[in-house]
Image (tube, rainbow, N blue to C red; front, side, top):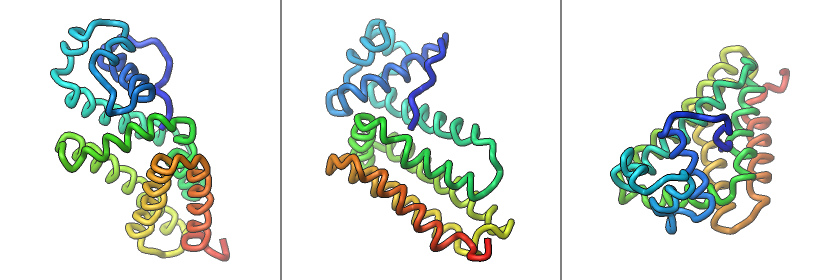
Length: 200
């Protein structure tokens, strides 16, 4: 979950997304208001409401923005080697978030609202499906190229997602800063034990 790039932009929507990102890290979901987002945006609440009717609408757009950021980061990975690509993908899921503890907290707060807010649940489901798809795709590629064992790629991807989700939740709930690093090691151990061919 990398910081949005700091290049100058003229798109008001992207500027508001960056302001929302900063406000969420500062105040969390529970204390987030349009006023605080507007202060980060450097404009009035009316300027934010011009683009988004409600805070829920804005946060739904923000979740779309984060998914877009993640997709861009994944597509910037140039290697086609399945083992390296899987390593880099797991880094983005478990290493990059280490510097964004406050945002992880805010995202968990938003995820807890998903059962009650369809706009949130749809975005989180879309995000999870996309990450699982990316993991499954690289595992399938590795199997086809003979780099990985012939495993059930869907099951393996879901197991890796469970490691990721569990680590992110524990690091927030238990305020344990070592959880993500431990989970990253566990993911490597799982990949070595299940995926990597002994003759590879």
